[in-house]
Image (cartoon, rainbow, N blue to C red):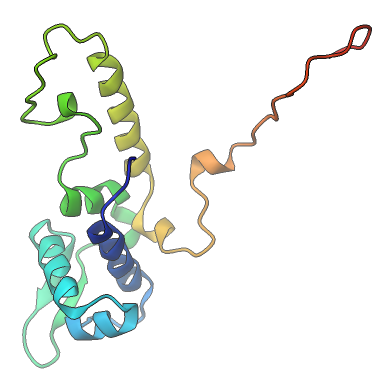
Length: 158
């Protein structure tokens, strides 16, 4: 199963809250209360996002966290990379591949193309879009053509 971790799910929830808020700066405890994510988890996530330059922090009585850039300039891939590490759907796509089949595998190129496509999709979606409750990604907006499940009957046109 291909699934992002709960850490990334929570991180996106925090980033979305920051993206849609009119409040300029958020304390970690306030974000925990507003999102229902446990405070220790919020603190760890904020530190990871801060280290990857997706957030900035301000110390002091009026301090807290804010987005480092406009939400329309932050891609979903940046957030996923910050919380999950570089996207690698298979071992051969990782930076430190340990695959014993690499020399003879005929699938490596295909998996690399699929990995690039996944990264491209995540790059094309912004935090601003993800923060919208009615967001529909580009590929979900493409109309689909229903597939006929039964063969045409003799004498009829398909």
